[in-house]
Length: 525
Image (cartoon, rainbow, N blue to C red; front, side, top):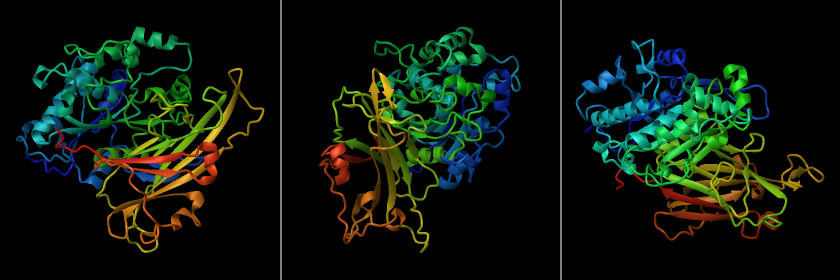
């Protein structure tokens, strides 16, 4: 067997929607279906000019950062088929070229595109890659419609296969983790037309775009031979008994301005609260981890060819620790049913990265709406606020002065709370101060070793630091690490109370609670 057990499983990329025959021909003309495209620009908030940053592409970065191999040899399918089982390196990258059989350029008398057929051919590729590499499972990475192809495989093709067990949870044995970039998990809707555009699209199937409507989505996301729970169909949900939700990550784009397809008409039709094609509310699966980045659906500032996207991808695929941050003990002034609207902005930065890993803000039309009490899991009311992943074996950045690795891994969580008032159901600006927060601070979290060399974590608010964040470092001999409040051995939890001066506003018990858990490994049952 070629699999070494080091956590590097085969990666299969699944591209997005190409449109009609001419678009499909254009897609198949690219050897890697677009996943080899990089960028040299980063959008910087508050500035009209982009900053230079050379991003090679997610495909090349996996090769450089994690030692993956790209084994095309003129025809990856033929190469795979000719190899002996277990002889192909597991740390390898493959592209699901599902459009080839539908392309006039490559196929005589091609059939009309079918997402069910694309899902079945993906399953065939997954089985082939597993057999030839000896890997127990694969990683799936998908952009846009590609995520729906993946879900159709997980929710229909695999459960409908009697050879694979004929059950909703059979996908667990084939697929380890799924990462989706800007996938319309809830379909594509428009902010204009009062629903008429959706009806026209779904009735005519123009360029095959009816696959983003609820009727077609129900067809390819529902198994035909396995019973599913009764109830109204909701494309943003997956069966609880199916593929584990914690192993699907949804990366959501929030930049509609930079999506220039059809000279910007698409972005105008979908609305500002989107990535230019997929509305924020439709870009996730309920109950799954997710992150928000200020990137458009595709193009020069696209989400796939971005450093933000790649950094979230590598942490989700290879991280062995899950870190969740939740604002707990919140007790805001007023009654839960009064006319005050509370919004929280969040942003997560990690030392050594040139980009923000996650960001929800009013400027990007996606602040966290504070529910009292919190009852739902939506993009506007996430539970928890931020979720990210760490690798305990990752190389730490070096100190700019000494050149030596820094002593701790540092994460910074920016929080900013704003309030609005309503009168008669409308926002009131009588006593309003635009973009003026009621509270803001920065939580600095360091992970390293204490004076005895044991793993330790420190948390401090920026408002309590006597110097710039970059110039402060915890002293293991002086600064007391955070105390673990969770007795469960495999679960570490700490509370960092908000600063004393903020407790009258946020509540006496208000705190950021950090949960750290080891992630399930390949030897799970």
